Length: 235
Ligand code: ADP
Ligand code: ADP
Image 1 (cartoon, rainbow, N blue to C red):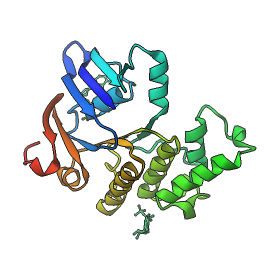
Image 2: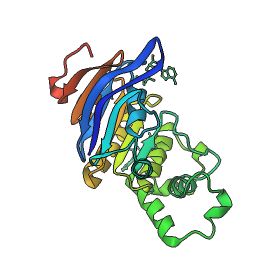
Image 3: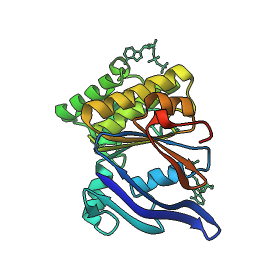
């Protein structure tokens, strides 16, 4: 589905954040990007949704060069759901409103959500239900636990009906039980909807537990790419 062809990213002359890298991501694959802080995980994720324009190389989405073709780029962005380390929800709004705004666009004002088409509300509620938070739909986000907030973030991304889901350190600030719930829900959604999913983590044990494929990064280089059971210590 996505093919990174010899991409590299250089933020400054003296810093290559990502060395020339070629990777393919197939439909429905659940990939963990594993690496220490500064390894280049966010940089690679931002290339996958083209928030970062790589310094060299091409990105093909379904065979179309998404850097050069602006229509393909727009479509690709619309079909990419993002989950962030700091969930980036509007805390004074309800869980439901955040999922709806994710769907309709944050440039819309709160008032423009009214009158709300019934179908839109239904989709948003279904997404909250998939992450086990239907009962929290009308709670303000700042009243929810960290794990619940992150799951609202997943529901918001899911409401875009994405083909690609990117999650940048989604469990970095969660306890182990909440981390497992977040990862297992991401994996279940990937399975059930066939969404290509790439999650960055720094914990080897979670990568081994959840990934179909692990890509290990160190200092901007891919140092491992394979099934998690082939992982050894030292990534
Ligand atoms: P990770 O997500 O694995 O922590 P990053 O992709 O954020 O790694 O960073 C890779 C390298 O690029 C690091 O050395 C980081 O300091 C640098 N870097 C990341 N973003 C920027 C930026 N916008 N400007 C300059 N350097 C950056
Ligand atoms: P968090 O720990 O992330 O704040 P919650 O407060 O939502 O999570 O979880 C409270 C309880 O509900 C937990 O004991 C958990 O086992 C259960 N729970 C959470 N999500 C689900 C779900 N999707 N299906 C069933 N039970 C759930």
